[in-house]
Image (tube, rainbow, N blue to C red):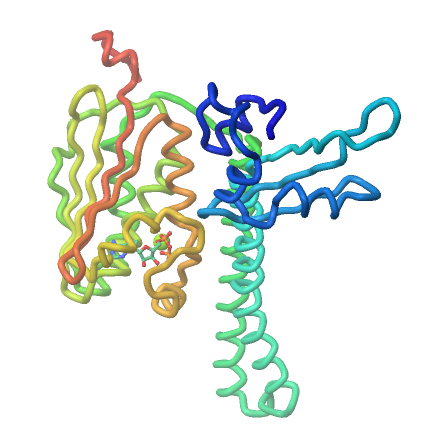
Length: 330
Ligand SMILES: Nc1ncnc2c1ncn2[C@@H]1O[C@H](COP(=O)(O)OP(=O)(O)O)[C@@H](O)[C@H]1O
Ligand SMILES: [Mg+2]
């Protein structure tokens, strides 16, 4: 028999608040875990309070219990605290995954560096051509580790609110145009066409940290180039709609399978790890981009069709001065 249960317990046990005192505890607990009968629990906490964690229907519960005595030290019942720790378990498992991912991503280039260095020390150094090519590999693997560490530090700064944001009203058209110019050579090397569909002499004022927004645009452009075949095309547009600026980067590349699209903003998620690595990707680009855009009260969205192409939208609020109709000076 249940003497008392608070709101939270009633919710976890999934019972009606009115009928709780008429319910039989053993019957109710079956729903969570058949092992937790009064008899079992009383036995387990004979000498001291006990606790355990168990799973039921995809949720995790932490229970603590002890015998409840009257003033003569006679057992009169059992007191039990049930805590739903699903959220905490999820966080812990995400943290563990993250550490495992970081270690793996750092270990891969390190293994390569180590094996080429050893081969050089073993004598390969005497052949200048081999030595030069090995050193080139070592150099680029060290660069990869550097990029990874830089990305990780930036993510961690943003997460701890230590990133310094230099928010100023600036022109998004100019920023976008200059970002496109920066990747033009890379696209040209892959014989890809970069089509700027927006009007180059328009002005779209947005309050932003220019360096960070440029980082996002370059990131998305680099993805479009990387994950599009030779000879492909990438359309770049900027439209203003409902007091927001929409940057649209649309490629006709390899695309992303539908069931993986929702995961591309997760850290280290890549559709094809080997491919991404060979392009120099860390798998953190979109995760960082998302954080930066959210810091600007904007959104970043991705839609894609496998073997057809990918469209990324970066949406930023227009500068309030513009939306209030005040002409701005810069
Ligand atoms: N334009 C795109 N076309 C196809 N796949 C893409 C595109 N942009 C991103 N992706 C997929 O999303 C993954 C995550 O992107 P990102 O966070 O930038 O990491 P990466 O360092 O691998 O580029 C990529 O590895 C790739 O699988
Ligand atoms: Mg990327």
